[in-house]
Image 1 (tube, rainbow, N blue to C red):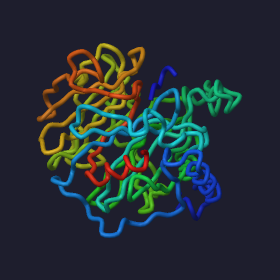
Image 2 (cartoon, helix red, strand yellow):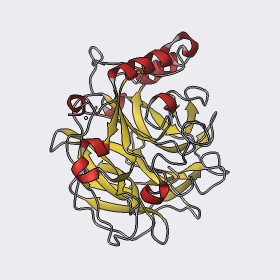
Image 3 (cartoon, helix red, strand yellow):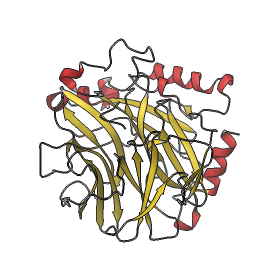
Length: 376
C-alpha cells in the first residue's frame, strides 16, 4: 500500500457481528451480482474427499491484488506464471465496502494451509474515504496524532473452495489493549504456517500512534477469526529511527527468507534470513530490487516444478503504478524480469492494469476450473 501518498474475539464480542456478515453475504450473492462476487458465509466445511495437493497437482497460479480505484479484492490467474488474466474482467471479486470499518481494503494476501484451506488477510483501510463520502475526515483518527493512513483492524477470511468465505474483522486495539490501545497502524497482514507450533502465524506492520513502523507477529485460532497472542516484534532493524514495513516470509529448506521495505537510504526492498520462523533474522544492508523509483510490498512465489522463485513488488513510484518482478534460484542473485507489459518483459497482464500489493499462490486445475465457472 502507498504509505506516504496516499477475537477469543467471538467470546469477547470483538469479531464483526454475525448479523453484519449475513447481511454482507446476502448483498454480495443476490441475483444482481449473480456469479460475479465471491460469497461471504457464516460457516464453511472441508470439501468432501479433498486432500492437500502434491506438487504434480499444481497447474496454475492465483494472483490476489487490490486497486486504488476500487479498494476491493481482485483475482487473476495464470497457467504459465508469466501471463495473468483477471478472473472477473478486471472487476472486484469482493467489494471492500462491505468488508471493514473503513469500507475499503488494501494489501490482500492469500495462502493455502496444511489443512487444504485457504486463508486470506488484508488491511482495513480506505485512503480516499473522505473523497468517496464515507467519512468527514481524511483519516479514521487525527493524522497529527496517529500518522498517515492510520487504522486499527485487520480482516481475516477462510475458505475451502476459493468461492465461499468466512469473514472476521479483528480490532488489534481491543484484543490487546494493554499493549496496543494506542495503535497507529495495522497494515499488510500475511500468514504462514508455523510447523513447530502447529498454528497459523499472522505477521503485519504496526506502530504506536505516529511513531516508526515495525514488523510484528501473532498466532491465529484454527477458525481464523481472531489472534490469540499479543503481537511481538518479528525483526529488529539496526536503526530504530527508521520504519520497516511489508514483511514477506518464505521457507526454503530449513531457512526462512524475510523480505521487507526499509525507509532508509537507499529506499527499497531488503532481505534477512533466519533458521527460525519468528526471530533471529540477520540484517543485510543490500537493496534487493532493481527499481529506480519507489517500490514496496515484496512477495515471493515459486515457479511450479522449478527451484526458481519470483520476487514480486508494487512499483508505486510509477505513474501509473505497476507490479515489478525479479527471479532467483539462490536468494543471492536476482534477475530483473521487468514489469507487467513492459517492452522486453515476459510478464503480461492481459485484461487489467494498475494492480497493487498482492500475492501469488499455486492452485490445481480443478480449483482453476471452479473459479472460472463461478465467474462465467
